[in-house]
Image (cartoon, rainbow over all chains, first blue to last red; front, side, top):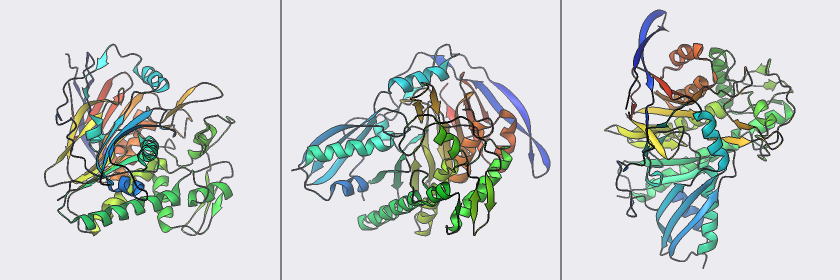
Length: 161
Length: 297
């Protein structure tokens, strides 16, 4: 794994005085695609995300049977066309657990990735994200958006008693 | 004590809010209801996709007289950013997006190509806004940061000490010990390329690969981060990560850096007082010295 770092000194003007600022530059280094063990290893079914207020509100106006439900919601917004999977369990009429997983990207998103990736000789070092647990912990631009609500509406239909 | 997180959809993205203070469930539920209400109101007021929003009305009639003071403040802020980016960042970008088919029906069919964003505002005062009849306004470049700060301020007013707000990957977080967040890989959303630990700060990200669509007329692939000056999508950068005191400056900076030429980078970060990490399309990166994120290398 090679690192190519160089320090670039760039003058910045702050409040009238020129201040030299050191940037750090380099190349994202590529080895194989890494689906290595996620460091957030509590990534099994005993996730700690409990009932979510809004989702409960969405489901609260009707009677829903206890059980575990899964549905895929599709992106219908400009966020790209793809799927998000939602799994939730209902007990005594209220949500006990909920999992949200972005699904594999559609062809167009993949093509778009390729377009950006041209010139890269190998794959960036990345560690896998368990998005269902880390949905609040990601600084990025993923849009799972309306797919989530789409999945919830399908679950409502499944779960109605 | 419950371990609740609030998850909901708003302004076209996925929200995650967690409050760490020990408060009872009723108070927590009240707070969540208030937060959702703040966001829904903002959406109803300013979404380009709602005919009855202030933006919808302005875009339709090209002028507006009764509007919230907040709208004037946002427009003035946007004017500043337009100036510092030499016109590359401009809220009249709605015009371009509509022409590309990024409209409320998500038709994705491009319309006519000749548009000019010069002289987009004919009047901008607290009492009246008038825009050029050929343009439409979109607050996407600053709206998310703006609303995150509104929610943040509401929680501070309610004396909440520790919380995290994540609006579609733009975050404000304050916790006693710094909290860590993963930096999403712009080339593969299922991976992260590093981590950043912050407290009482905001981090944002702009990337072209999340709001992409294929034009149904031409078959061309487009994304939403377009320079208002060149009217072209910014292609050299894969992602911009920023770090700042508040969500508005972090969010605005990430968009502004993305759509502006490299020569304007230092002016932008200076004005908005942010640290940054830029990942280029070919995998090269640069970051400011005080950017707290650490990359997996």
